[in-house]
Amino acid sequence: MDDAISRYKQELRGVGLRATSGRVAVLRALENSPHATAETVFTLIRGDLPGTSTQAVYMVLNDLTRTGLIRRFEPAGSAALYERRIGDNHHHLVCDECGVVRDVDCVVGRAPCLTPPDDTGFRVREAEVTFWGLCERCQANPVDAGPVFSG
Ligand SMILES: [Zn+2]
Ligand SMILES: [Zn+2]
Image (cartoon, rainbow, N blue to C red):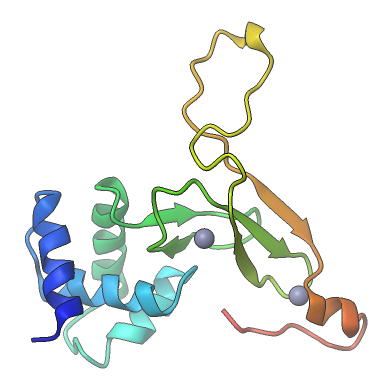
């Protein structure tokens, strides 16, 4: 068994989840393909897990998100994206044109790195920052580039 798989199993047990092959497969898929949608994850793992379904993938993604092993990020107008990079309060750059998503480090490092004015009465847990703009490729090919599905 390779090291990554035993590491995933340990992580799953560490948060009180059974180390099922489906959960291990989803963790592995997200390690290799960050910011993947549930559909993408399904496509990535179904070769290894012939019996799986999108419904099963959604359930696994929910369990992993709830227990903090993956992070869910939902840019406006997009399906929810999932990633393994957790716990560093990083932010995202999203391209208006092609939808490509990049990680950008949080300058402060821990949440919440931005705070609203003091008079809201809220105890703020987290600030989720999404930077919208054009990626280098879409800046270079403004008009007929068309959508690029690079995930
Ligand atoms: Zn772009
Ligand atoms: Zn990210």
